[in-house]
Length: 221
Image (cartoon, rainbow, N blue to C red):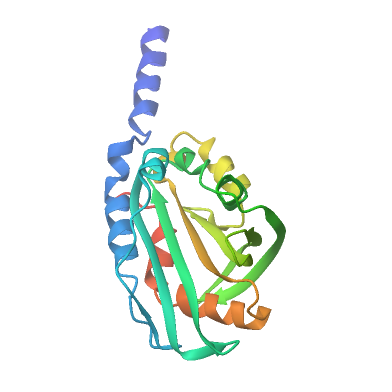
């Protein structure tokens, strides 16, 4: 009788555990919210061309649920005599472990751009306070130039995460990892003044506050 009772308890406990199929409604909502990121942003008069596709090697590494990779050009902001430009990259994965290899300190040096610096940032955008890190890399293509990457993650249930340590922590929970993680990168010329870089970040990330909320909502139904 004692063994039967223990077995019944184990079965009952297992029934409360999540599995990947339970999280599919969340991933469907996340994908829909990210795909609503506007290609035209009124604040700053930003416009964009068609989205770029990830390289096949990155697709195989990340197994992404949703990807946005696009270049925005402002019709209202000029820096050093040229219209301001910034790229937005969003990658959302169904399993947070898949994100481990996709991270600026790994990806950019691997493509031949050594890291120059890494500084934390805390900025308000889309009604949220976002913590992350700004990396700078040296692009050696002639003429060489410095590139700034504002990088942060959203881990469902944990919120905004500044670096890969928070993503790895979430991956240790075998149920939590099924919610995956989303990584955001806003990339621009590091020669833009810091206040201009921060303003551009706020404009582009603040253009879709709904997505920021949806990505941090953990209900599976």
